[in-house]
Length: 284
Image (cartoon, rainbow, N blue to C red):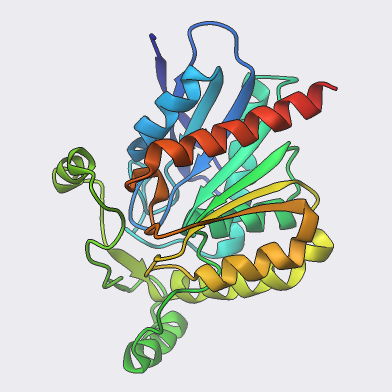
């Protein structure tokens, strides 16, 4: 199947130009998926995810967040989690304007899951569903206390100072092609600013508190039980808070990047199946 690819630029209210990758079906579009990537990566890294969705008749857009990919800025830095949520809302608006009348879905992974959830709560964009994979609501580990103390001081006096995330190759298994691509990808990085770390961390807690009262859309939430990066328990807490509003998939044995892990095809089939169900519900 031929896939139409485009590169777009999305200006924000404060003058930053966000890079956006697009993958489109050559024929009719049934729905639109807006992807918000995780920490240290970029939207172009979701080409394989997009290709599966395009085969299902979905138009896919992926934004490079501030400090990531081909979007300018200090690597791993953004002014605040709220600013990223506003960017995501603007991103959804751009995609919606290109496909008026079609169901829109916001899909966030890891740090992008934090941003997507925050966007849905704070901004309430006109989406038919929210997809979260391994969202950073809390981390699966406790950062060293010494690093946290340094970070808090830096966040106050030098917010753009970046430190290593300290994450190694703990994201997925049995995917040599993706490993090869990652090893040669100059856009990947392992930096995060002190200000961004604490803002994202605080936003995760805020979203956990506010979701039950403020979230208005159906949610598909997937998290691997063996994720060593973001907290499986926090995702389960969110699902329990949302009750029937959320379909929670605890992926047994799954690592952090389920869409790149050993069961990647089944994961994407589950996501696309859920989207198809929502599209059907919107048409009834």
